[in-house]
Length: 260
Ligand SMILES: Nc1ncnc2c1ncn2[C@@H]1O[C@H](COP(=O)(O)OP(=O)(O)OP(=O)(O)O)[C@@H](O)[C@H]1O
Ligand SMILES: [Mg+2]
Image 1 (tube, rainbow, N blue to C red):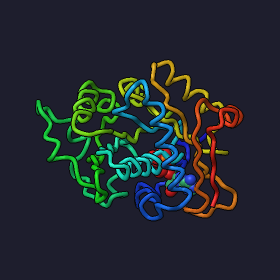
Image 2: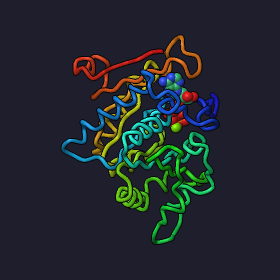
Image 3: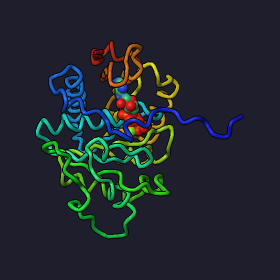
Image 4: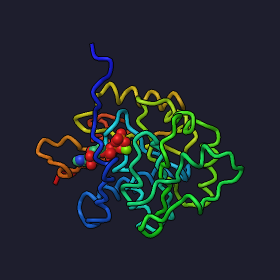
């Protein structure tokens, strides 16, 4: 029996960043799907305003970073002042996506003992109007401790005062404990489900964990990573619905899907 499992997933976005189709092809149906995700999140904000929200998934490589970055762009395009935080300290992507330095970032802020954080010294302009980013920073030896810390929660609260919306790209909930911990202190979480790839049991377990921690689940994004005829970067498909299971979302009429 092997001691270590072969590494799953792909490191493509870690090396090259996520594809920003909302910028490259803003008029494409896929970009429109991202705007639908934004609209549906806004629906959820009617009675409970959403200032901080995170994207997570059950396992690695299900499309969290791609979706978080594109949704952040659509909010910025709609005129909201957005901060995208790379809170996946183990598999960071945001610096590569926006071609930025990662010398300082979230890990620097959270591990520092300074009483006050000077946002201007750590937050970077993304190159997209209204969109600011906080990269992950150097990889720390104790990511769970940092993300699950009180300082992290206070920091997110503080950023909410400076931006209209704070979006966090989180590590997968079944892989690490800190995601569950931090999520319960945010205004909501969107679960990314890789269509045809995420096992049903994993989705169920992820939802249970979020509910157990009293996390407000804003919905989920069905990400069609595994489209049979999709080469790399081909066959994007995004849907958005509430609850989980296709039938459920179809019934509620919120599920939409596009395949190039
Ligand atoms: N809808 C899609 N169609 C095709 N490829 C996709 C789609 N969504 C994501 N990908 C690809 O899947 C891989 C994983 O995506 P991404 O890095 O966004 O996922 P992740 O959940 O953030 O992964 P990690 O667990 O490493 O943080 C990347 O190569 C990305 O380009
Ligand atoms: Mg990621």
